Amino acid sequence: MSVAVLLFAPGVAAADTAVLAPPAPAGLAFSRQLDPQLLAELEAIEERVLQEQQQGRQLQQQEEQENTKIQANNQKSAAVRQKVTDWNAKAEPLEEQAAALGERIDAHNAKPNTFELPRQQAEADAYQAEVDELQSEKDRIQSQQNELDNEKSAIDGEQDQVDSEGRQLDREKQQIEQQITAFNQACAMLESQLQQLLQQVVSTLQSTAAAQPGDGAGGDQAAGGDPGRPVDAATDNGQAGNDGGDPSSPKATDDALDKYGQDNDVTVYKHPARVLLTPGTVTRLSPGAAAALSPYHSYDGLVPNPDQTYTALEVVAPGARPDPFDQAINQGGQATVEVNGRPLVITRVQTVPGGWPGPEPPVVPAPAPAVLALLHDNGQILANGEPGTAEHQVKAKLPAGTELARPTPWDDTNVDPGNTPRKRPGQCTSDWQDYGPLQGTTFQNVIGKRATGAEACVVTVNAAPRAKLDFNLFGLDTSQGMARCHLIGHSLNGSDSDLRNFVPCYQNPTNNSWMYWRFEYVVAKQVRSGDPVYLMVRPVYQGQDPLPVGIMGYARSNNGWACTTFIPNVTQGQASSIGNRFQGC
Image (cartoon, rainbow, N blue to C red; front, side, top):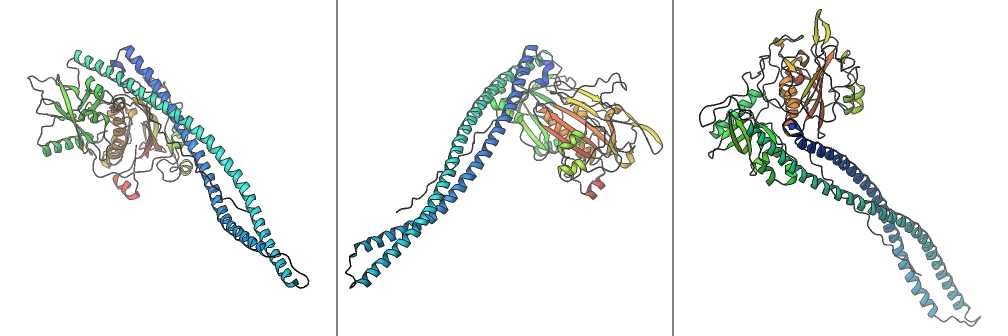
């Protein structure tokens, strides 16, 4: 009589082949400068990228679902292994008891088993008693062994089922990993094709720039062999108190560039420069690095190098991530820009910390994704900027009377025949802006009009200086620290004169710290990277008040980057007293 020891194999390994992110085409933002054939190639490859992105998401979802099933199978496998361990813990001592009983039976059988009765009756009775005892012990062990055999059969059945599921999951995993491998190979080929197209785009743009002298990024022509000092980016710095509609970004940038020049004892040309990669730079990059680039990138200033080349300066916020364009230049690449009628060569990029106007501004939690759907409704806006769960954000309300001013329908062409409404685009391929009609309102016995919202596609960033804003705006009170605030910012090609693009808002923190640095600036950076962005901005009002309680902003890029945020319209004191922290995009 013996008891077997059960063994069990480990579970299935999880699928671990990474799904690579498809590259993003970077040339469509410059479609007006490309020939139709090249543009068609870019559009075709963009369509392929979109398809690859969708397939990548599907594969990633399949891999996650498969790993969830594998994890469940491995949990069942672990449970069976525990049963095996428990079974063996009972079987091993029973095996020892059976072996000991066998020895006792052998010893018993070795004894004389014939007796003369009645003379040896006592010996015969003792012998029989030992037989009965051994038989009883054997029956007990056999009963326990039968129980263990039944348990073993059940465990074997579970083990067979788990093994069968595991083999099936392993086959499924291999199929998914083969699909992922093929997908990653397709992405690598797509990167190579994008690199070739980017090189063609750059060559075309460089040829166009060479054929159109004096039409570059520079200021006025300067006589002489050396490039003259470029015209400064802005004459109106938009400081708090001058009632500027944009934040003090030019002044903050100028201050950062001045400090860099003083610290490094160099001359800084504080000139916005939109530089263009050279074809050779694209060629020397890896396909993956090249596919992430846009032909152009904007910088805030230039510093001459001893070898007649230039270093481009970019003022960045603290914690900004390395930019692929910067890395391409700093790893031996070059870019060109025309300043004051002369082509300059950029051989180095230097980031300059600065640009944040004052200490880190407070933040409010961004609304739940469901809030975005409310932007398309004419009813009240719920839970903008309020903390809490998604359910709370959908159900809770702003103070009574808070509403999103918006015409019904949005594309109302009767107010302004020159305003041609556009459907929300699948992809932004050109710059455009649509402004909602002004809404009549009466507040404190004064009749006026207020903006209702704006939409735009931003393909290029406006680096031109902004004129001073001095028009009348209903609800504006500059004595209370208010400013004329763009819905679509100046750098995002928003109008600097159309009243439909302006609302009164507090200069700090709403306009400077939040609206600009945490929304407009982030969108502009995304566009500069070669990823056009669609914008939808809506002021949120309480009752008939022309001063909004906040501004809802939604941004979505061609490559899938997106942000929904509610920007409270509060004074610095109000922001500090209520403890609001605004995160933005």
